[in-house]
Length: 157
View 1 (tube, one colour):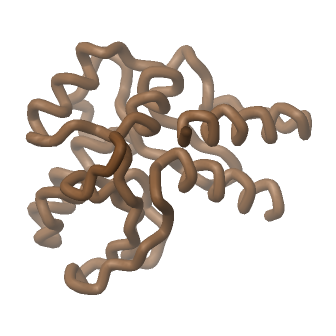
View 2 (cartoon, rainbow, N blue to C red; view 1 turned 90 degrees about the horizontal axis):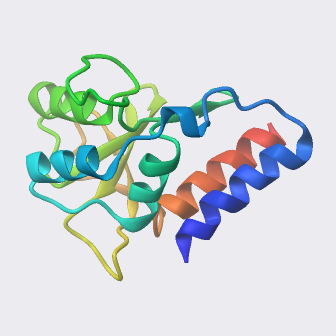
């Protein structure tokens, strides 16, 4: 299960003794807030990403910034609010309505959940480059795997 990948990634960080000031449960959001976002999107979020939101809200570790939600306020117009950033990119770059941004990888490249491609309550994470909406590149089978891979990359740094 990909939820275990998120727990494994957090354990990897903690086992190194590294600090994780922004991957903390104090930034978590509640189920009502997640459901409001799902209603606004018209898509159910994948299990591993929901787990991330409900346990961490959003987070950052060694320059890897995972967008999510800000406790008690889905309308904050700043990073790391994924719903606001996704809507902004949809307007500015014609991002497909089924793509949901979870990380800005730099140089006009984003990591997005492909919400229309749900399989066993998970969906792939794809790379989207500004202006190249038909050239999506596969990054991971699920948010949980993506998160784990990015944390391992940060630790190998």
